[in-house]
Each structure stands twice: as C-alpha cells, then as structure tokens.
Picture 1 (cartoon, rainbow, N blue to C red):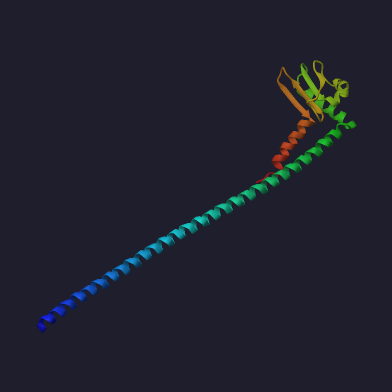
Picture 2 (picture 1 turned 60 degrees about the vertical axis):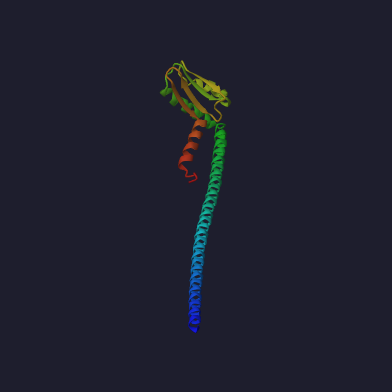
Length: 198
C-alpha cells in the first residue's frame, strides 16, 4: 500500500507541478501581453502627441506668418498713404503757384506765344481756341493773333489757365492748358518719383 500511496503522491505532485507550470506560463504570457499592450499604447500616445505638437507648431507658424503679412500690409498702406499725402501737398502748392502765375503780366505773353505756336499747327478754318473763364477779359487781345476763320472763347472746363484748341473738321486737338500740364506732371511724378509702395 505504501507503494500505492507513493504513486498517488507522485501523481498528485506531478499534477500539482504541471498545474504550477501552466499557471506560471499563463502568468508570464499575461505579463508579456500586458507589457506588449502597454508598449503599444505608449507608442500610440507618443505618435498622437507628436502629431499634436506638429499641428500646433504649424498653426503657430501660420498665424505668425499671417500676422507678419498683416503688419507688412498695414505698414505699406501707411507709407503709401503718406506718400500720396505728400504728392497731394506738392501738387496743391503747384496749383496755387500756377493760379498766382496766371495773375502776372507774364501770363498774357505766355498765352500769346502759346496761341501763336498753335495757329501754326492747326488749320485756320473752324479752329476754336478755348481759354479759362477768368481769362475772358483777354479774348480781344488774343483774337488779334487768331487767323481768320477761327475764334477764341472762354469755358469753365479750364481752371488754371492756358489754351486748348479743337478743330472738329480735321479732328485735331492741342491741349496747352496749365490744367493738362499739371496733370501730366502728376502722372510723370507718380511713375518716376519712386513714391510707390513696393
């Protein structure tokens, strides 16, 4: 019987040992699985954190670039407005000076010389020479220079002075008004002065 009991003990021991091995193996597998899952979860968190950091960094760069563009545009507008203001002041002063010039005795000589040159370029018949309304008192003096078949008249479309000639039959126009000269100078100044934002 002792032999039988010994066999039973060995059998129980073998089963117990096998059960313990299986338990240990299952615990190891569970630990490995848990460690693998934890490592995978950590990796996913790191990837998500990296993506979030990259997105936030990109957003910050984009916003900074937008802000710099807004500031640059605002500064350019400010410079452009100041340049436009300077140009307006310069041409306002020029307009005043031209108006003052139109009140001097030399202005009549200017009109006569201008009219004399214009009569050489346009046909006599049908040409109308127009002066500013304020130059109406000079029409008689200027009419003496006009060839027959043409005339001098005043119009309020000329503000500063000078003469505009139109021959409707030939379709010719010569504009020697102070108004158009000032406008031409303004356009030239705008192009060549360097007062542009850029």
